[in-house]
Length: 322
Length: 208
Image (cartoon, rainbow over all chains, first blue to last red; front, top):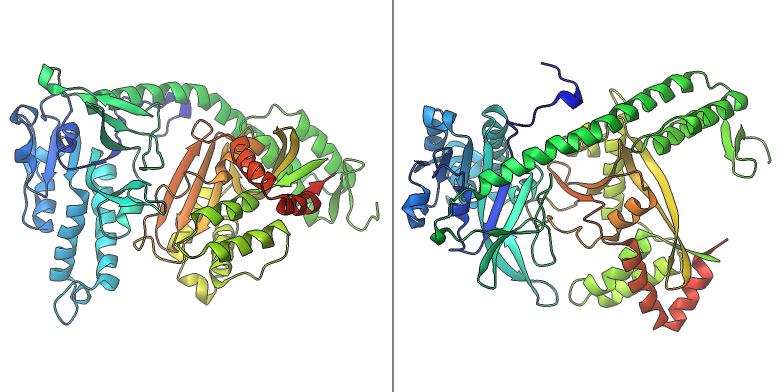
């Protein structure tokens, strides 16, 4: 199906999310906050830690426990996984450990002669399998994917605390590329916050109107555990608004770039270059089309032996001493 | 009289404070080279960065581009980047005037790629992305603040970071970017406390 940009429907848009923070801060409970006591969620419990959450918040959730990575894959091919809207990986650092174990058992070069993990070769296998795993759940199965990470507190050069994801290999970096939101969960005073804007102490990622510190409700007061459900809903609403605002601009931008490409076909000498320059300036521009158009004209002029003369503000033959 | 200011100058100054323990003297010497606008011999790491960037551009602009031996190791990462930047304009100069603390500055830079309202900057990591944390490294980088300021039509700035295999992206919008003036103010205030260095700056960075 081909849609025009302005016709796009974001009502079923899925997201990738990172949640990280100190042990006991409530990351798993937050990941289960789909507003249905977990009915919309499949939790891949790789650390066997879901038992520490309040039973009410996982009442309807499907919990995937597995001893090996192969078991995880097998369980993803079930109705429970297919029906879920959200897949929680608890924790992503443990998933890498499962994959190291898988690589050592199935890839001969992932194990050293002494039987330990061969980081050099092994992480290559872990990385490519992880890519395909993430692709499967995010793109093919079209789920919201929530990655939970523990965090390590380290010190920067001046001794100030910085919070980092606890995870081996390149995934701790590349995971940020495929996600929409990344929050550091922390206590400020006696309240919990999901922090979506990066600060010196921690990295974070926000978009589609989700930014800054968002307070996580105290669930003891009987409020529903629906933080993520509301977050996704708000993001979808903002995406639709952003799309309405931008699609006109993007259409105009594409129109200008296309028109300029056509105009450049007719540039053969200084006169036609200067006429083209004036025509470009008179266009109704959008986004960075004006800058890009002048770069395109400049490249074309250079290719036919012209240069821009700043004094006369026009293109002249490059050999001209002016 | 205006004074040219670039992200390279600010970065080399910031590095005096952010360098590894014991590297302060080297950092200061590097900064002095930059301040004096002395040409510097590129290190192996810098050459790799330039070569990788050129590979990305080549793949983005030339169908069936010839790839040499060294570039073969970087094909995977370069392909991920070229997919993003294809169709954009490469090496786009941008500039603007701004006034800080009563002094006129001319902010100048070259965007790696500009495409549909987004500025892209290609970064190469000589060490694999698995060996160190990269995320958040650009939070205090003046580059996105400067370039978004100098190209007001751009909405977003994206760092495209690769080790030749993987790709890490870090995105900043206009709203996320610290004011360019803040970086310039801090730099200028520091120069004011170092009259000899301020004199060098005044001499070497003045523009008509």
